Image 1 (tube, rainbow, N blue to C red):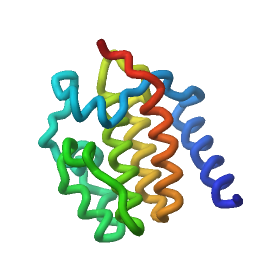
Image 2 (cartoon, rainbow, N blue to C red):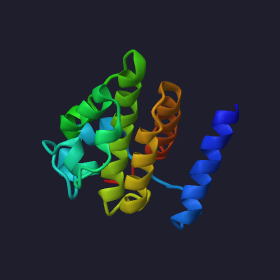
Image 3 (cartoon, rainbow, N blue to C red):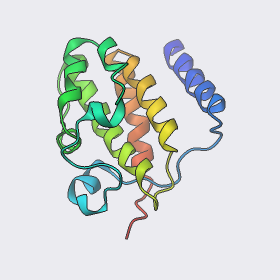
Image 4 (cartoon, rainbow, N blue to C red):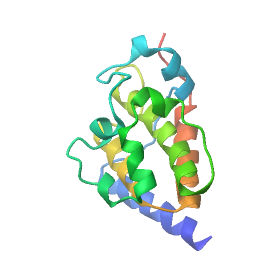
Length: 152
């Protein structure tokens, strides 16, 4: 319980520090993005996670090797990630939701986190290396990504 409260306060602090006093009001799911590549903006299905989330290649290197190696997968592959055991399975669940969040933030018609805030949250979530923490973050992004897709 204490860990959850610390994480919640950390998220609140990040949101206030970034000027975010609101949450997304819309979001499209990983399944939507996987099946509607014609609606992708600013990104392409074959683009790697590393080039999309961390083009300066500064923070993947600090993750456990099995998690860090996920950066070589493409955005489309990430949308198809399934869970699994251990930290890597939880990271796959989180990265699937983060990828949908990235595409939501990039789209003009989706009222989602601003891109710079989404990238900051992604970094914080992935650096919070613990299976339970990854699943907690994935749950938050799942909630935001299921708020309703506004793209016609």
